[in-house]
Image (cartoon, rainbow, N blue to C red; front, side, top):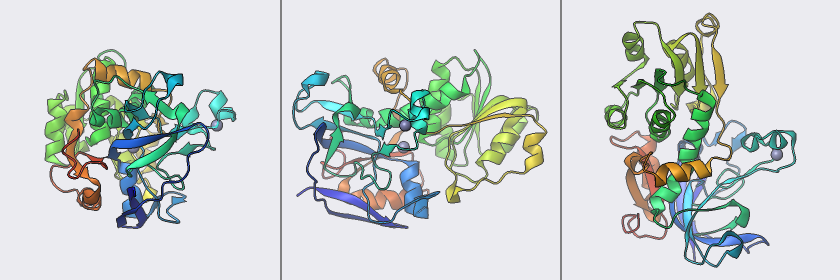
Length: 347
Ligand SMILES: [Zn+2]
Ligand SMILES: [Zn+2]
């Protein structure tokens, strides 16, 4: 019998037998190779939900994943045993937002791993064929799983539109921030100055190309002589993230907000934002970004492995949630390997 990790409520996660349902027409069975623990999964864990989306019954999280096909998929030129990635986003395709080219904003979306749709922290999963993304067979399970968060970073940089060699302030150097940092470099951004309260994240940011990394927005202010940066990308989980993005921004600057704040509330003094005349965009998931995510990894332009700090087996996953909720030292991205005892055999 297959097993899965269930989120049952606030700070309540359990590994239990998983009754694999029957596949529907147009679905294909995967053995899950690797699945990422995302900041959004952590919000469900810490807060019991995100905004109006709450855990009403035990559900299986996990939307960043890759797996091995259980059978051939000739329509996509794939064979049983091939490693594939999965786009978790199933937009309706017919609403005004889908037709306008924004499938990430579809109100009818079915998203694998967001309640009530079970996700991939399980050993086997049925997914719609059309959401299967072929990848180079040289990719590791970790790289397959990291394409989804890399897609979020690509979408954020698409919204940010950095000018050539433009200075960028990056707030938050967690996995998404560190992927955004790398994509900004590919997109031609100039000096990237970063802030994160955790020292190991500052170090990783510098290793991946930030010119400077400090603990707070005060460092950004000092480095820009209190002018602020023309472009700010926020990828924190802090209620102060929006306020800090405003403080890091130059008058007339642009801000892209990517993070999901703890408690689902921003703290923002109005005058500081109004007086700067800012242009602000909110990033929501991603659009059709997988082809570029695959190219960036295949060409070695983005190092997704540099962002992965921990690997766990399925039984260790409750511990992984606990460590992340505590901000335990050294944590960046954790990957779960549901079909490996110790999470280290496959990678
Ligand atoms: Zn995610
Ligand atoms: Zn739609």
